Image (cartoon, one colour):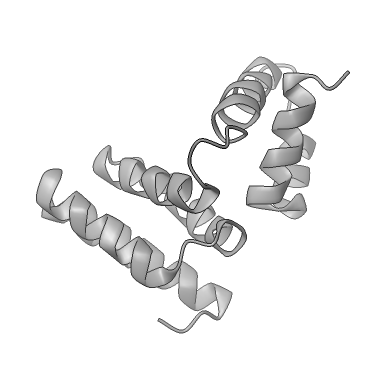
Length: 126
């Protein structure tokens, strides 16, 4: 029987890649293990595992929400994951343009700056 945690780890690996998940698991401590389990089961084993919308769409939503709420530290991780979700750079820019209109130009500006730097590190021409 596959558990929600097992599903979550599998989806997390598909979206973020083995290297990212391996680093997160290696850095897990007794202190943050409950948090890691919660996000693996909830975010990855439930939300990201659901097929109602595509991973591409979920990726675009996630990037827009991260930017709109000012949670910039996870934007580079989700930009890198876009290679696995199918969200294209021009689509990501459109998500950030929506952020500019509905949540604020400074947030979108910072998100775009992070995206440009991350795409450059990845060797993606934009």
